[in-house]
Image 1 (cartoon, rainbow, N blue to C red):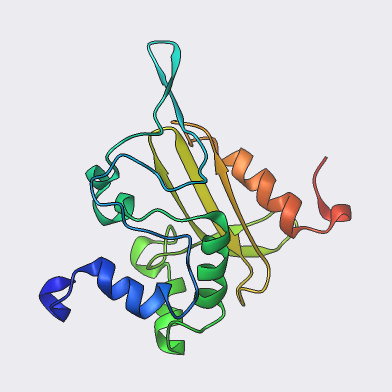
Image 2: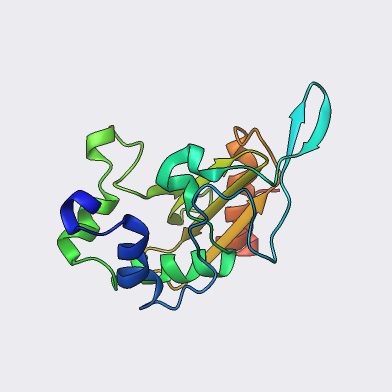
Length: 175
């Protein structure tokens, strides 16, 4: 982003998104291995042993890993994004269009079609010992963000169960 704006991406994000939407729990630690308090702990399974992997240099994941946020800020951000406060209607349509990826992903969000017929939009992320996901209704009025202590977020059934419990009326939930 610096090549386009003349400013580092963290400065632009603070000015354009973090400050206007009051995202006070979001920070850019650079290559510091220390998380701001309070924070959860991450554990990785190494040679059959659980090892605390909370302290790590998140910049190894580039800009995606270098930004740290809270679940509250994730919900605030997605409320603004899905609620149309960040992008113009044409850009929102592009954000949700999965055409370029043949139905797999939009430009930053993906759809999850729940068993009760509800579709939610969101994004996920993982790094050593931690997996997080945010999903919400198309208008951003109903959101959920959660974090799981894992190195292997491959069982999407668990995530679908969380989203189903949150977004589907109880009479429509599978047993």
